[in-house]
Image 1 (cartoon, rainbow, N blue to C red):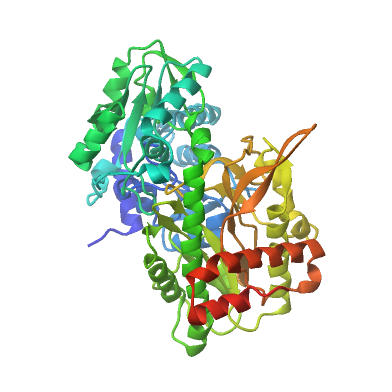
Image 2: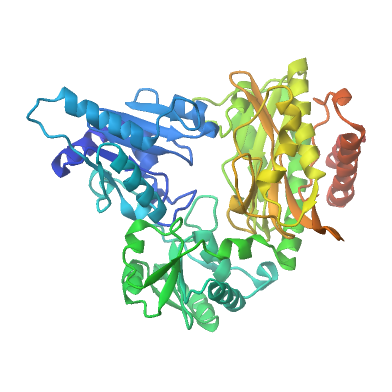
Amino acid sequence: MEQTINEKISALRELMRREGIGAFIFPSTDPHNSEYVADHWKGREWITGFHGSAGTAVVTMDAAALWTDSRYFIAAAEQLKGTEFVLMKERIAGTPTITEWIGEMLSRRSEERTLNAQRSTEVAIDGSIASETTVEQLKADLRKEGGLTLRTNIDPLRTIWTDRPPLPTAPIEIHPMKYAGKSARDKITEIRAALRREHADGMLVAALDDIAWTLNLRGNDVHCNPVFVAYLLIDSKKATLFTDRRKLSDAVEEYLGAEGVTVDDYENTGQALKDYFEYNILISPDEVNHTLYSKVERDIVRRASPIPYLKAIKNEAEIEGFRQAMIRDGVAMVKFLHWLKPAVKNGGQTERSVSERLTSLRAEQPLFRGISFDTIAGYEAHGAIVHYEATEATDSPLKAEGLLLIDSGAQYQDGTTDITRTVALGTVGEEQRHIYTLVLKGHIQLAMLCFPDGASGTQLDVLARKDMWAEGLNFLHGTGHGVGSYLCVHEGPQQIRMEYRPAGFHAGMTVTNEPGIYLEGRFGVRIENLMIAAPYKATPFGNFLRFETLTLCPIDTAPIDVTMLTDKEKEWLNNYHATVFTVLSPHLDGGDLEWLREATQPL
């Protein structure tokens, strides 16, 4: 019989008691600092029961808490019910930091015990799944909390997680050149040139999407992300891929050899770092875990990996792949939206049933490889839960009224998609129309923006928020993130968000445009397209860029309060819908084509 959360906590505390540990920290990462992780490393989810992709759990001998961001406040509160875990809302006034809370809990325990009892001052985290930066910061912060120390050489899940999933062994596939656009050998040459500019002789690549992109390989080790568990060690003379050899067919091994890449076992990465022979090595402390970082005996060049920037600027083949993927995804979305309202009116539809319908329509498209993340289909109040995912217990029946928020995406072999539409299923209230139009205005303002080459996303973010700010409204998630080319749906370094992110935008970078407003317990609105930065004009003041929208799908005009839109905003929407019809109409017929014609009529 499966253990309850509180039984898991009890098992952990027994181990902590034996080891003399006062608090144990569970991050949401894996040894590669991934956002989404293979089942083997979902320890934070296992110990808490909280399924969100972001969060940190801490267990002491007397208390337990989970820190997560605004995307998950509502979902986490629901999923933590009946457990010891207390929800800590990040970036909300009054919420203690992790180390402040640990210091308070351990001090309180010391005071409540007898005078002869010694306070446990040791806090632990598994160093193999915590980045070097995380460990260094934790050590510094814990010292301020009464001299607490950090232990990094223990993984309690090896003992207490009795049915822990094994490391994944899905096969690795070659990503064809017609979609990759550049050979692995050429990419490694570019990486070496970037390393020389940093005065580094080599580097350890830890990020799974960086490895997949560099080698033009794809895998299936992580849900929705076509990556595989591996490390890549590049020096001035050779490149070595460390992975489970069972993943590699003869054809893939032969391909790697032809690209100048040798293969070694995944578990040999640490020894290879100890044996590294060059003068120095670039290690990104934000990406490489503490355990591996500690193996290095040569001089370390502490810099960010150059690969994310190289990967972020899409080449011609990748851009064309995005365009083609958007056509197929747009066709699937049109078929879905044409079906949706009549199906809801006929009855029997729920959040989960419409999500399944959308996935099935995408699966009919050529080059479909799966969804790019679990679909968010939130009806009315559930639409206010930013990362809501319907379960059997929460699956709401849909009615021919109100708003349905659908955030979804697909992996095609030539591109990755991410799109959100908020749809009026019938009559909507005036407040819903007003909020919907505010979000649309923010979306359009960002989509129309022209800006200097190299501007950061933080400088651009205000365009999506200014009209809602004027009414005292806001959203706490990012406005936009990069998207991979048949890779992870979240990609950097470019982002658009309120928090400062220095990465500049350059031509060829993709980014989502997804402002939203969420009224807890009532409804939520988000409208999202994928855009690409493209050249606009050169002047004596420098080179300027503009955003080109790649996503092809009508935006629901039924909930719009047209009086709130400026002439420029109406013009943008009408032009966008004209483009959607022109590009998608040759791929549709019958009722789907007629629905598209009606859905793209100018305001």
